[in-house]
Image: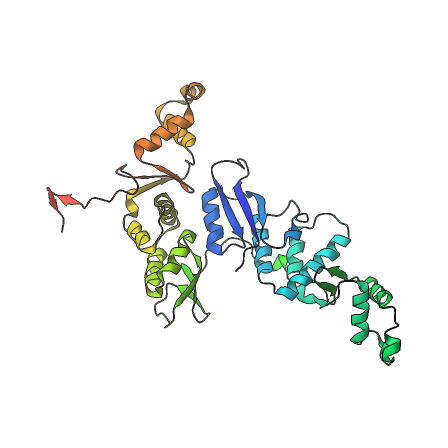
Length: 371
């Protein structure tokens, strides 16, 4: 699915803090949930949102009102990404009709209704009144001129015919055609469930024959992996496609299905800390997941320093120390000492405090390797 725009997300009380996410919309269910994991919001807290870039539908930029929330924008862009060329012309026409009402910014809920109402419009291949008038006269929309001889037909004032039709219908011109609404618009917004939810799969694939595969599955069809459409770990989608083996991916999906959300969060942090780039390495890291520690409250060297000092001294001493201690430098020293890494999900370190990428030692018993 093509992407429509990019947004910057953060916590509303610290919009430019260390806990943030860049997200292309529309986002898949797991991409959306992953962005929320990075923000570490409190229950019921809405994220701060800023639109960074439009990849398509740039005309929306001056129209979106301040009520544009993440879930509403995701629903809108999901529908826009599904529109074909004719439907996109209809949507732009509906937008222009809305702008002509001169009622100010358009609520996101209304934009969603318009995106779901593109089939309520007709599109004519006309860019001005003269072209519209000729189109209507030639296609039986003006009954009075149907029996005219060709020479007389060409003497008609097509511009006047088109202007009167446009004003009477309330239609508009876009850069790619004339749009007129012919039925009532759909009220789709209030029927949508915008709440983020976990899908009924761990990994969603598109096979070579175009069918969708929800993994894990007990019995796999005889087909070839084409694309990864969604994954509980979005950062592995490229690695899953590169693996080329549905059987391998299905086995991996089975392991993911047994993980709790807390374990999954820690696993995603490990993958980020190690910059894991292939599925085989991801599986190896999963085997040693219990040896990694994640602290989601620490998002920077400074917050690492604050956490350490809070553990060491009382609040009064803490206030005094903060005046004289270079907190970012102290935090960087702590990270280096513990071989820790700040990931998009928080502070990550191993339980043996060895470097994140160091190989794990085989367990021994009485000086002898365990078999």
